[in-house]
Image 1 (cartoon, rainbow, N blue to C red):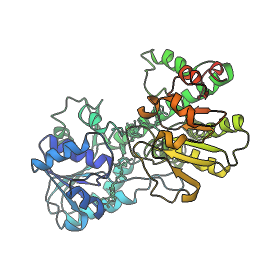
Image 2: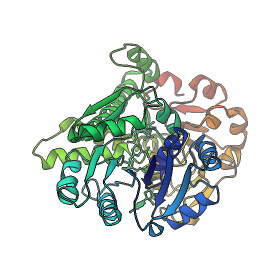
Image 3: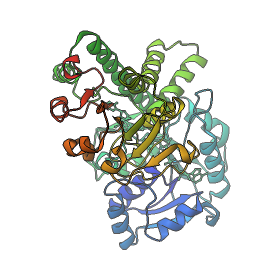
Image 4: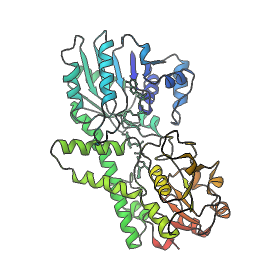
Length: 436
Ligand SMILES: NC(=O)c1ccc[n+]([C@@H]2O[C@H](COP(=O)([O-])OP(=O)(O)OC[C@H]3O[C@@H](n4cnc5c(N)ncnc54)[C@H](O)[C@@H]3O)[C@@H](O)[C@H]2O)c1
Ligand SMILES: O=c1ccn([C@@H]2O[C@H](COP(=O)(O)OP(=O)(O)O[C@H]3O[C@H](CO)[C@@H](O)[C@H](O)[C@H]3O)[C@@H](O)[C@H]2O)c(=O)[nH]1
């Protein structure tokens, strides 16, 4: 069967790879000509471990082709999967313009009945609305299925091939079964339900996980007040199966292209529907606060930050990805620059900022960790890359200046090792005993 995947970002490319591996013939389509050209030249413009290998194999087996949207005159395949972006609008709502454009684009090119699968994250109620607005009564029968994606960047292929569950929402049983069959090669539990409930599962899952992070960050603040250690507390509560160990890492909070925007969109949706989702608002407030903590800590040790030299290790919103969307690191750098500090930056994957976030003369990109920390008084660890955890901190100390401060924004370093190297260690919610 031939399938078209529209939007070749993190989700779209993984869907292309996963479905091609399952034996389907895939046409990947994007509006970005540069992206298509580079894909056709065997290059992938995102960093996602293992993805290139699966795409290369599918290309070798002639299972995939990549096309710019302008090259598509007619859509003659039975299934079209939408994976375009749904970013935040300034008011917090999800911006559905890419999705609506795509639905209209599909309609104009349809020459058969087909099934549209929505993999983009769209607010509950969107599918029903899109169906009424664009698809009901159209000359060709178009089924609409909500099939939200739960992959995590950095382990997207693992999440695709071994999902905890697959959610399929629809109003037509035949279409639900057709979409369900796409995943036959995976040994996955499939949840079949109506469109709006499927859409809400996606938002509720992200909101719940984000709330879990903000909750543990609140406990971390309490640890700082009481002299307890948040990592030990998180382990202790996570061992309770009812709570679970995941998403209890305290630190500078969640970032990325999903949690921040999806939590905001759910908050907006709640408000517009007359429900004041207080818990979600608290989740957002706590998360915004967490990324201020490293700067507060730096101030408390260094006094004012004018002309202080500070290294920031990590740009991406988490390890294993090149994605810097809503990364706490960016806000920390911005705040440090506001305070007049000189900032040097290093990330193992992200080597530049191709965006106009900062003036180029305000920051310096180090060649490696040592080069980045040279001559600095303090280091902020903003992303828990293995390279930072495994580095030889004694060597780092030699090239730094007093007071040799490490602010561990991800609680990923061992305070004893760092202290023994002669640093001041300051984590988020780690016992004051470690700070000296
Ligand atoms: N990134 C994730 O980890 C993740 C996980 C689950 C769900 N999601 C959701 O999936 C969707 C896509 O996320 P992403 O991170 O892959 O986005 P992305 O920004 O990486 O990719 C989106 C792609 O869509 C393309 N595009 C935009 N408009 C188009 C159009 N009209 N026609 C063809 N292509 C078009 C863009 O050029 C881009 O390549 C979002 O709704 C997101 O919330 C993302
Ligand atoms: O205990 C934790 C776990 C995560 N994070 C942070 O939370 C953010 C998100 O992490 P993660 O969930 O691993 O990354 P994403 O790739 O953004 O994946 C989330 O967002 C995707 C897009 O909706 C969903 O598909 C995934 O299921 C969901 O986990 C990152 O900044 C992490 O540093 C913490 O601070 N503490």
